[in-house]
Length: 565
Image 1 (cartoon, rainbow, N blue to C red):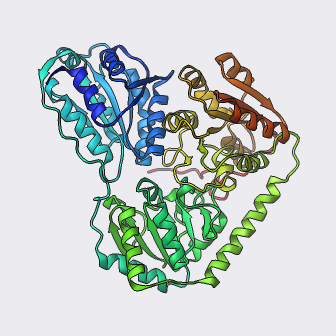
Image 2 (cartoon, helix red, strand yellow; image 1 turned 90 degrees about the vertical axis):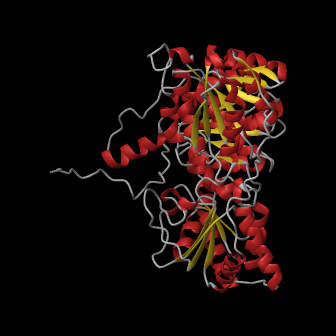
Image 3 (tube, rainbow, N blue to C red; image 1 turned 180 degrees about the vertical axis):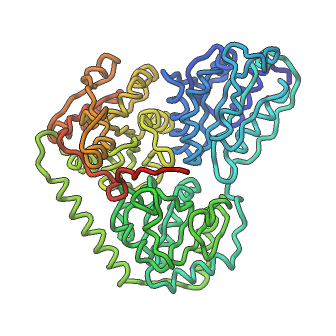
């Protein structure tokens, strides 16, 4: 068929099943946007390019398929970068498209010209500069294939502006499979050995990570844990990998996580880590590896071979897709008729979980002048339906409480900034998640500092009719830094904030807004916002005298002075 470069690019998007592209309109790809309109692909316009890449990431995390974002050359591309880095650390299959400078001006310091490939190389699986107009379909197909294969991740594709208008004949390419399950052969002997060792261990623990979520293997994980009676914890930020109401659930690892989970891993004689690289964010209160006991046997399985043994020596390593491995293990259990009960260890871990729950309950019931954030989160869990999707910003008032107080019973209902911890994460992710699942309630939870960074995107929510609910826990401070400064330096510099009325800001943008300063008002506002079916912002006044103890406690101190020679 004969087509222009723009038509070929859009046809490639159609063949990949793409129906939405997130971006900030730029002159460098107006022709592609125009062709997208005729093809029925919705261009969702944002107010800052970072939001476009965060939306693509949120869309991908909820659907397990590719999310697509676009930005103009130069500053547009650099603004896109942070969200792409989020996708890279979180293994999201985001395809980021940018226009390169016209080929006749490449490498001439032209207006808006930057080496996009060099910029994106550090935070993508691959960056592709299309060398000829007639190779656009080939490179588009390659971008999606790379993003979706093996351990998923972002790919950047750069299409020179003049290629969009070039005409050429091309054959519609055969779309390569998106199935990532062939990501490693699972030997039957390995599956049987892991099952056998879990069955024989006295204090086994399963640590499940994002690889289980991306493989859509939660059902298999539940069956395995129940068959062998093994307690389950999750890598930091993946609390939704296992039903939080299940008797074998310990809570999440990492700072801001569950002490019951930390204690169980520290005492365990066998750790089965599946779909996780066992990073320091999960295996220590903060920046270290203290939780995993020296001498603990570790079995690690991950689709990425380089993750195996990266941070800890392992006795058995298997590089494969989590669903394939867990399925093979279940087959081994069924063929051997193996069912195990481990009441002493399970009861011990359950008792530790109950003790931690009592500590949280005391915090939930604490009387405060304004809103007690622990009480607010507890109330939120009562209100929200199980299918609700929650996005969390970095910081104490969001992750710091939500990881321990918000329960999740379904996979892909928690989106947290794993691996990069960027402030301003939650609203863009919520917009992308809602675009993917318009019928599910989607809530963005953030502190006031984070909302100040990206709150302008409530205008995007209004314009594009993406009905998310933003809850802003407002203590007029950068909470983590204020806690750190107060406890380490004895004074506060730059961490107090003077905020506007965020509810009034929302109303000016065309959204619904409420400002609350009591738990009853909070409950009423959340219920009303969920019933509004329009973008909403709830400005929650948190007592500024309450500085929640940072998850970094005990690991932060004023650094000693060093003399380097």
